[in-house]
Amino acid sequence: MNDLRLIQNIFNEFAIYVTNLETDGENLLDANKLLAILIYKNVYPRDFERLHRGTGILAEILNLQEELIETGETTYRREIAKLEKQLEIAEQQVPSDLRELRQIYAMALIEKLPANHDSVSVDRRNWIKLSKLSSHDELELFISATRLSSRNDYYNNESQIDVSTLQNEVDSQRTYHQRMTEIENGATDNKNKSLREIHELRSKLAVIRTTKLDELLRLNTNHAHGLLKSLGKMVSWPVFWF
Image (tube, rainbow, N blue to C red; front, side, top):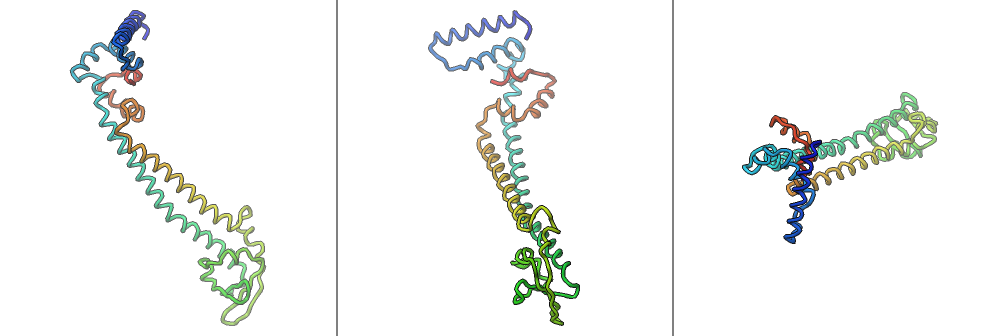
């Protein structure tokens, strides 16, 4: 506002209201809210008159509350459903990632063995078929060994294989165990993050119907702006945040 007379009128009217309220011994009205109403009344007098009949721009905005609540509820539920779906996919992805990692190291080990060998052992007593190596519970024991025994089960001819550099050849920066832990920890971190976000969204959803209009307008700025434009008018937002 750059109209000094208008500013003076608002100030005088504000002072009168404050004095009357103090005289009545009541202090029920927030001074900021009172000032906002008086600015609205003086800057938009026609719309202020329409407000008494439940029409006009401000009336339209006040009537947005239920619509904004429903929009917020829909948005929160959609975001919760999206995060829950991501969690479901992630739960399925971790076993897949771990299985792929095991296959990578199992294949790297098999490539070091003679072509016609089909079993491998750490202690020359317990032999594991190569076809079952990637799914074997003790795969990491084979990967971490420095030497392994391999054999052709049909001819029973056996060889000693140096596998001390296996892990470094597959990944010079991380061991198999480190990579496995990264997958598991990464999945856990992402899961916890998503669960926190879901909890926050559910908390917001639970209280959205008790949220004040000004907060709803701030949460739905684009939506509210669109509704104002549809009225064919542009109104300064701060006037209505009371």
